Length: 414
Image (tube, rainbow, N blue to C red; front, side):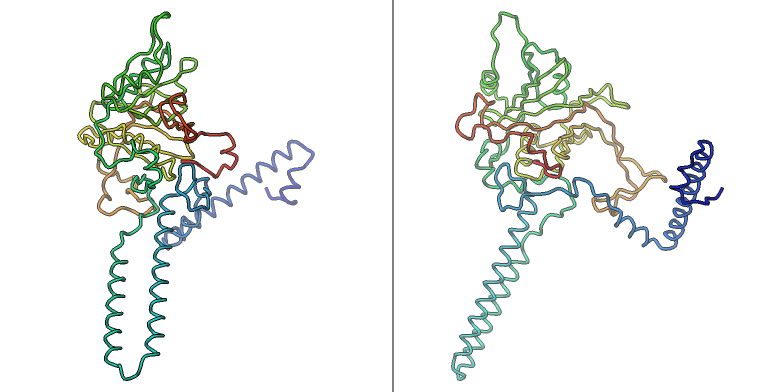
């Protein structure tokens, strides 16, 4: 059925039955045109694979991650929204440019001095020229030996980019001494009912122990500072306090012993492992730790906290991995068990961050089984000491989330 009018006018027919027929015909015509265009493009791309590569390179979705904005400052202090990797690369390029400018200025000065010299000192000029060439060659070799910058395509967190100002502000987290073996005490708020959830956290963090905080109505109620003082005397390295509302976990406070800092998170979307489809059961092996997409000074500080809560030597025979993926200031916590297997004929090969196939693993795939629990964290406050009451001074609260921070949807803190 053809159209005697344009589609917009044809769909405004007063008769309901006629209007319905015209609408169905219009949808069929548009679907047919779309399918014909798709098949034509597929035939052309089969003849020339470069057309498909060009189309995919052009059709990159513009998400909030691509539109992310940064502070245009040369500042790496806590709270500055800067990409430390890009900042380091920019500083290195600036230092190299200044070095090249100094070398060129020295060469120009030497050329002017050579022009003023007497023409009878040809032999001395030759010696000066050779010495200058040797010095320039040594400087070129020194620049060539510089460690290449990190590829910007990776999402893993590089804690080597930690600024000196951040390390000096939190010496208990950033020090040159080998970290102690993690030993974590897990507890809850007063008279809590989250006993099962606390035991799940004990399976997530190795070398952890759950001590209920509930007591008799006339019993003494220990504060967080008293619990941390007791834990530090028993060689614990961290205290994890779970908060609840309506018998559901809503918050998590992590204290790095013995003197802080304290990180306060909110919990959302808590799902225990047994409710996950196809879930597995965790073992007592030390898991591997993956920290993804922590780029700012505050992000590196948060990543360092979680790094101190897991043993530095994972047990690979357990094939367990704990992933903390930061995306738009939400930290997604997942735990998996992986298994390597042969790639099926219908599956694609493993690709890198740029979409290119990795060499050497074309026939290998990794199967994942989620173990749980699954939940999401959002950082709300960082205290200098043990909680807000245990922090003193003007900088007692190192960082605190405020609602005005999310006015710009393209600006993130971690």
